[in-house]
Length: 443
Image (cartoon, rainbow, N blue to C red; front, side, top):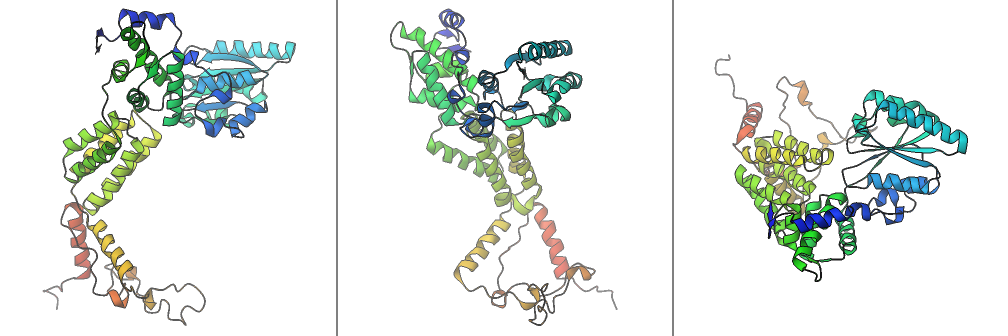
């Protein structure tokens, strides 16, 4: 990757970064009030904050994507507590390390009356035996465990250990939180940033505060080369070089225009175009949940009865966005996009609803026929409710000829069958049931 002056990191930029600690460390909050984001846990009166303020915290597991503040929150909890904070990484720690810390915690409690908080980063990397080694000390309260994980703890943390811990889920930082963090970083670095460059940073951050601050730090280092002792102004080119990605122009109008092109490409059965617009939205930082919602709508509006499985595929992609998250969920979105583009198309169900809705709004729609009314309550038969109703399952064909519409609407036809995909076969079977021709050889 090259920047405007050649290498992405010139010698000057690299030297500047080496001489200073990481921006994320320099900006690490010193109190829970300074934490950006996670208001649902750390705001005044919120569950985790209440436990910390009262120094009543028992073992917890902090679950969330990278860059959401798990390590920061753990350290701040320790600062607010009377207990001693001991950090370990599950990547390098062994069962012996755990036993040593348990022994130290026992001695600390006996000699000084001080409790111990054991912070175990990436707890999902611990094996079952390593997690089991923690269990007795967690059960007795000798150790208050704070485990941090990016993986679903219901899959990765042993049930006995998880059942003795309170699970708190940290969410990706929203745009307002990211902007606050970015402006803090730029200010600490003694620089200013253009609105366009800031917007590009926020679009590319993906809810990850650490990734955002790394981008700020590198962009400022690159801007410093150009400033040559003058004011430091970070522009789009600096951010693009820092992130290794060109800015995709994507304003308010683009949001609507690109999603429109995306849906119309699916409707037009062009998988290449549909994938192009999907890639453009993802590159611009479009909300993946918004894309997934549009796929679910398109599955019924434009494909419908021609391929009923399309709705299942779209719904599964939407669930994957919530369960897996980006960047991996882009694969699920691509899967659904291509499936919907290739599927046969039918809007007959959507069109039928439109016709029925117009009737309901514009003219009298009549009463429910007596034989269809609720006959489950006492006295219903005397009122004629349910009298004369014929149960379709009693007929070998599974269908009986009876009236289902109000008298005033017997002439309507809302559903007008299509001939694409599975709809054609379903309609053919439906017609055979309703209009069975007599057997010419009978009698």
